[in-house]
Image 1 (tube, helix red, strand yellow):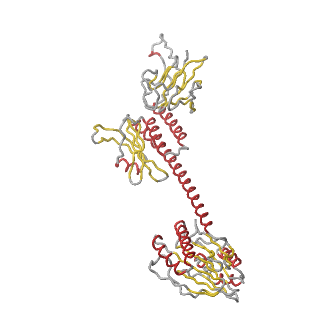
Image 2: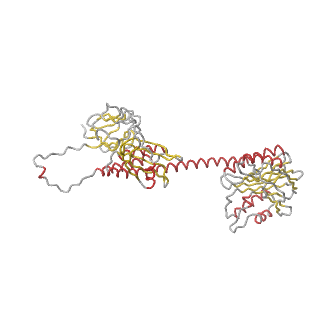
Image 3: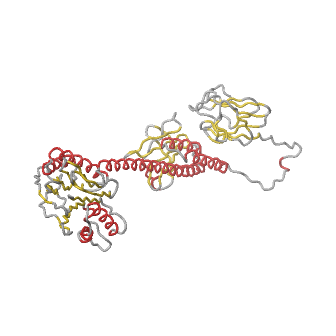
Length: 522
């Protein structure tokens, strides 16, 4: 014989608020159970309590949803001992094990009127209810703090809201794009409470809205409350509850509880959104790392020699991936293609267009050996697929035997010809419009003779337009001073990049910055 009972702390109403444990008991959905728990999530024979070795033990009878003692799930193969103050959880119900209070002794000799009463303290029902609601708030926070599924959080919110507010129906609506969608409603056997605009308007302005309403086609006054679900200052949705106790005090308690629960839910939803954003950022960085690696792989070696042309270059992406293009490759044993370009804009879109333009020019120059024809066809390509973007480009074919360069300057305009005396000169060519502006544009090549002790330096506007602290531009004065001291392409590139960092205050510019230098050594 045991003097312990199982007491309901929270959950849907049961025929009796407690169950004596003086004999074996079965809990479940079946009408044959000692305590019938009528909920779809409860198994027909969910759990059993029996005496064993002088104590009480709880056994999970192979339930689908599990049985929990002190927040630990019970292994169906291992009965768990029960003691006073233990807490049980089965579906939406929460129970407590406590000792059964002895019946008060009756004094048959003293009439009631002769008893002198001292100070009497009454514990009001709302105080006890407040304790239970606090337990529910703590439990809700514990069960959702690490949740990642919004639907699961919202359903849990509705479950706890019903248990803590004595509501008949609780529904949650979340904003999806430009409308609200029903995400969860408890209990599922009842029609969901609708999303009422008037209540939403009020909840948007304050904490909780309470009203007595009559729904169309469903006569009868209903006491309801509505509270907004906020993440920081932004509203994500609304929680509605149709109360079963119209008593003003009960309604006030329910409103306070719903407000506190909604705040906790908002914090949890905010955590989910932040974790989701972090995962998206991580995936974006991974994709960008792959994009940068693809760009690195399609570039030639940073310095070297092809078909008698000695070169060096450096590409600095201003943001995520570079919109500048550089390419150097041999056409035959004495001719080499040299390309430097700049796609308008920066970032991923410019980087992708850059890669396609580089591939297109590479294929055209290998096939035609003609920079004008390659420029014309690439111009048509960019006009068709560029999405409004354009690209400037210097496209050259270098003949090391003849020391002659045929080139097209398609709106690029950034280059220096370092003569034999070490003096840098700006190109004096005619130039053409950038690629992608006019699909019918005609491009003509120009010619340049490069002596043995001369160099060509090409660079993007990220170098030409960089400004120092006093507002001066890097080009032409600082750039030309650096080039006067150079003797070969690799030294030119290294010195210009170092000078650019110093000029910009110790950091590279935010725009894409590229430089390519080449010569024809004896």
